[in-house]
Amino acid sequence: MKRVLLLFALALFAQGLHAQDKTWGETATDSVRCWENYNNFGALFNQKQYAQAYDNWNVVYETCPAAKEVIYIYGARVIEAKIEEVEAKAENAAAAEKATLMDQRNELVSQLFEMYDNRNKYFPGKEAYVKASKAADLFEYYGDSASQQVFDLFGEAMEIDATSLTASHFWTYFMTAVELKKQDKIDLAGVFNIYNIIDENIAKNTDELNIAITSADAALIAGTLDDRGQRTLQRNKQLLENYEKVKGNVEKSLRKFLTSCETIARVYNAETFAENRENEVWIRRAVRTLGAEYVNDSGEVVSCRDNPLYFEMTEALYQMNPSTEAARNMGRLALVRKEYEKAIDYFSQSIEGEVDPLIKSDDNLKRAYAMQKLGRLPAAKSAVMEAIRLNPNNGQAYLQLSTIYASADGVCGSNAFEKQAVYWAAIDKANTAARLDPALRGKANQAIAAYKRGVPDKTLSFQLGHQEGETYTIGCWINETVTVRFY
Image (cartoon, rainbow, N blue to C red; front, side):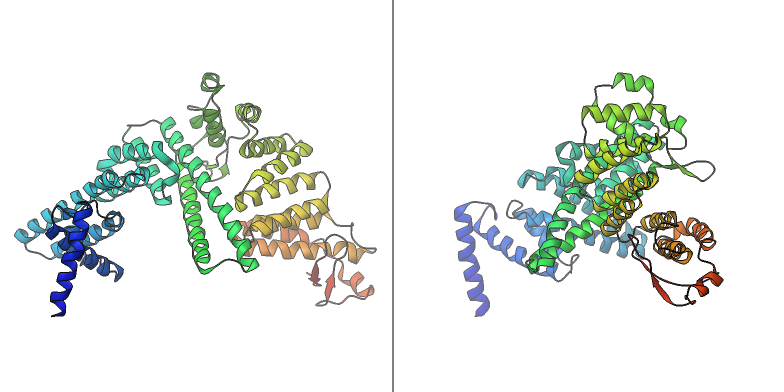
């Protein structure tokens, strides 16, 4: 009896839907069937039974494709789960059954790509994201054989709205560019161009995320961030991590093409610069590529920043548009030229305009280096501490702080013990650098070996009333507590 009443209610509901429009099916019967299956596939999806949800989902997709966008939002996962189920069955099936199952699998793959097209047809507005998702799945199911089609689809998506692509979309896009270079379908300039396009748009997305995260973190500290806001904050932090990981992977993959400055000069040289002297985008990308680090034949990480053309392009870019990135490049140029006052000014500009805490942390270290070269040790320490605040895991910051402390030999205190105690603080910071970043261990150990030779003399320390193992606070601007030890 209850089922009869339920069906009767569904029939009345479906008639109401059908009377309004035909989005839930051509007939009232279709509307009942569509609504039932819509609820059933939704329930199975929420239970993470994606493959089991396929039959119900497919009825909805075929009967009322314009009913709800969620049909397409959930559709990819449902179809992909069904594909996996069919592939698993095919692995141990007899030849005839296996052929049938593989035909079914191929039909499902075709349906997946059709579904992306239908999403844009029935629910326009997210064309870039949908095209990129289709491109990613094309690469997933057809691999390198579909590289050109995948590459072109990503290109279309980027032209519509590059910022709507996910981190994994950007990664797949670059991988297809690399594959097409292997196939001689695009040249080195094309690879550099795709790298720069991806890098620019990842920066746009991470800038927005950093702004949102900074605001949410402030609200969290103030106790005004609700549960929904906290979930959004965690999601944004995960998205940021994804983008930063992909950015690092893209840069690492690019290095195989940055085999020498001569190779890069095939694309970015005096002749091509003359042709693009008024093209801000081209110059910005040239500066970024020339400034990128690569591993040479000796295994050293180097860049082409000592190329005179890099200096000329950097200055031209800053004159055209004194952006945050341009100011940063001018700061690097000033350091190379040992124009430390100018470097401080340029890095102050880039720090003011930068929203990415990791980049801002590195800018503070470069500003600190310029201050240190000018003998402004307290200011240099302040800049390094700001770098650490922005990125507590920045091992390079602690190593740089150790050099600042070591440079203060003779500055703080009234006797030899007090003046040389700075080396214990320097050793502590170098050890922290090695702990945070194992790649710095070699440099840190070299520094520590040098610092140990500068610590106060044991006999003199004893005469001045200091024993091994005691704690001592270094005064003035250093303000560090250290443990007295001798080597």
